Image (cartoon, rainbow, N blue to C red; front, side, top):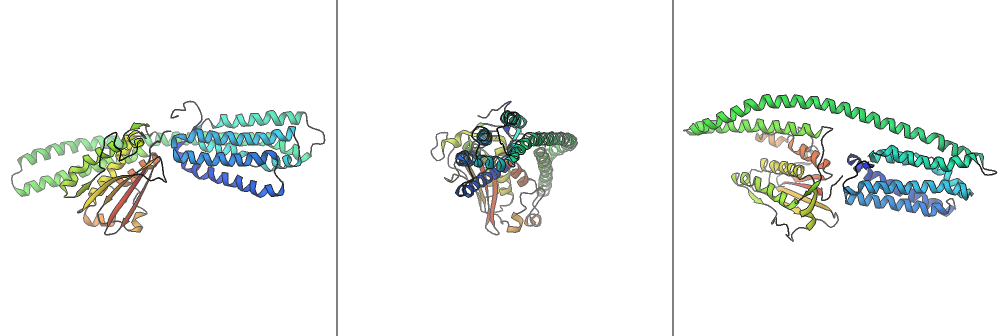
Length: 431
């Protein structure tokens, strides 16, 4: 199910919008059905079709929320149910005409373009094909009825049929033009970003060469340092060189996130083992700072402390580790004493998701600063006063990557009591 090559495919960037729009449309359809049924305004097909469409839309929302990998088949089901309902209305007007069916066609005709809008909004490829297929079926039915109209057909109904046949291609063509324009703009953006990447690559090369020479010289000085003053001077040089290297890495990583060519891989990995390995990497630094370091209890593949799906998650382990690295580095940077606790959590209310908590005993973050902490180049006032080095990009990178992974990140902090960063990740985040 993770491969839909050559077929219509949901744009992952549009998934959050679909999770809001699809259930809203489902509720509107259900409300119309409930309002019109008592007044006998709906026909036999409406009494069946409207609840059917609403149910499919709600089930599709549940499927997309539970498993991002199900987004494409879920949206195809939405369009199939909508197309079936719309084609059924036209069919009944041709072969079982009645006042209710005429009312259904006239009232539904104005909403038919929403089908095309949903196709183009949800699918980054294959949308024109789906739209022209739907329109082609309408042409077969309405065209035949206009060539051989039934006796005493109302003029208003004939005008509605003509409006559908002549007006809907305009929607498809306009949407197709907008998509092509968006692709052209994306191409220009990609070219602009490639220019930025070349500039950063040149700066990186020109800076890292002297930086590497500096680090080599510092190592030689450290080997020859005898007195305490010389040792402290060498340590300051090492700190400054390391700070410059981290700033450069953060800047390059943040720039890559804005690249149109940036992509997320989808492969199986062990989330529990990944978290344990990441924690083990940073444990020496925590011990050096004299901090208590608490991590998940086990990493065995058959460990019963965690669901089996956590050992067979699907996503991009490198990007997940990058997010967790940034959260741990942030906790280590702002925790002068006390400890850091990393935990894996599961909640029955969100099956198919894992939550990674990073809790520290640092100075905490006030509510006003929490609203901006995931923005780029933002540093807390307490960090500036304490002389903490940093580019202000670590949490911004973590937030951007989490969004690309289809997850969520949030902070809960009380000044003077520490902070809790929670990372939510889907265990099956296929395309």
